[in-house]
Length: 117
Image (cartoon, rainbow, N blue to C red; front, side, top):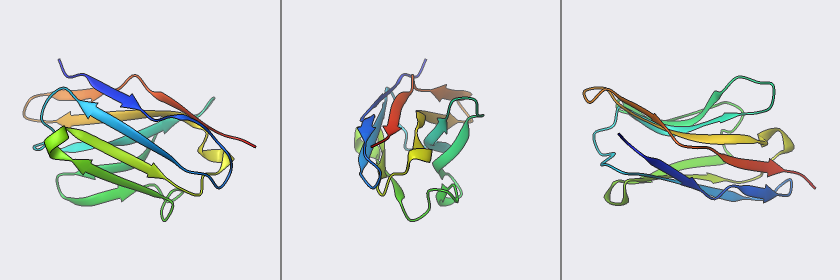
């Protein structure tokens, strides 16, 4: 069983920044997908920024130019740097790890991000 531990959420003002971290209990080096999703109240969960095995990260249009996903394989950790935050970024942010050959599709517990003045 893979454990994903998220941290870094909280309250930010519009235009502010937050950095999320997600650390996995196993190696992420061979992952087929690892990244961040979010779910706002009354809305479906959506992809925010994800690393795939096919190439570079994929970003939602709504966060392009503002959010940056990065990873440290040695620490089994993926990060989400969120700049120029907007109230519409308010949501619970979830980390996800997929490793197809190991049949792993794991989710973190979620971390709340609230953008408000």
